[in-house]
Image (cartoon, rainbow, N blue to C red; front, side, top):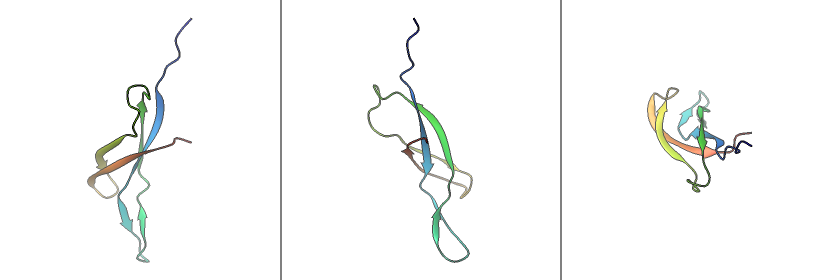
Length: 66
């Protein structure tokens, strides 16, 4: 029998904010999906990646993939 893959898919969401025309600050909404093995990495993932919406490298934090 084949072993079940222990990796989980997680959503990395950009923490960058963008101001709207009304002056409100909202998240850019940009995200990427990665695999994470909870046995090897019990902590939540955080990466500095490029966000094309704000055209900068920003912090991406892990959230649940719905």
